[in-house]
Length: 388
Image (cartoon, rainbow, N blue to C red; front, side):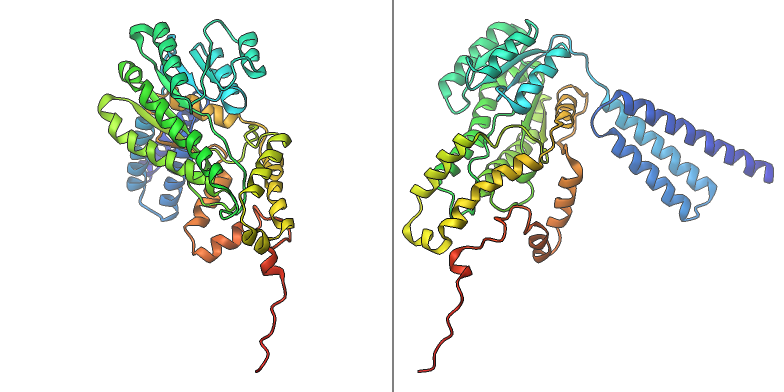
């Protein structure tokens, strides 16, 4: 009996070693969320051991874990590039610019859509990338430019179709209390972050269908978790996330995979320049009624722009996690439906958002505040009612 028990222990250890070695090898070769699943499976097996399961059931559980890991890894295999063509919008700067360069180095045929084909970002792409990369003038709020870009892509890909569309172009608008933000900002955010992405998707879907390719939409952490001061931006990104989820179901019959990237805080230049802030601030002030200006006060209203500097200051400079996840969504045999580069902050906020409302509001209260400033009407001392 002791001999049998000893043999079973050694067998259990051997299977564990094989599983661990497989996880390490696959994790090095496959980007994305492979490591997270492996850790979860290892944790489950550890729990099983702590629960003092019999050796037989522990071994059976481990075998099942091995099977699940193998099945998962088979879907994580990266497909060959083979000259696949990818369209990336918003390639002037930030994620789109870096992603166009990255995909070009991997051997993809890249169509880099830019807002200004004569701008510095476009010129840098032409100068530093291979001949496989083409710069396209593509303002995604302009239907004529979308059609022109489609024609240029068709001329180059011919019958191969387009392997992937990465809807990356986006704006954050001017942050502030939802009541203060003018409707023009709401419309701009929806026009770029949602309607523009939808129109690009609808235009290029025939080419994606031909290649049985990928649709990758860059949403945001703010599209899944409510954050103060970002009503316009968050609403547009939430709409994009829901659109992507519906399209994932509808396009599955055509074997088109749809993924959503929801980055946390990364420094991409989306906050814009000081000159842009000045114009948006003036636009905000011009659209506020005298009553609202009186209630909030000039100091509070002018402090709204501080959030743009805060976003830029606190964001991570290394955007490689975003590039890695987009690459996985574009190239993996079975890409994930959702990716969350910058996971710790995102998962923390998701968890808190499921808690009682008061707790969530307390946690996020100081994240996007205007310092110690309060609206003027709330800061004024309350007058005591005098007895008549």
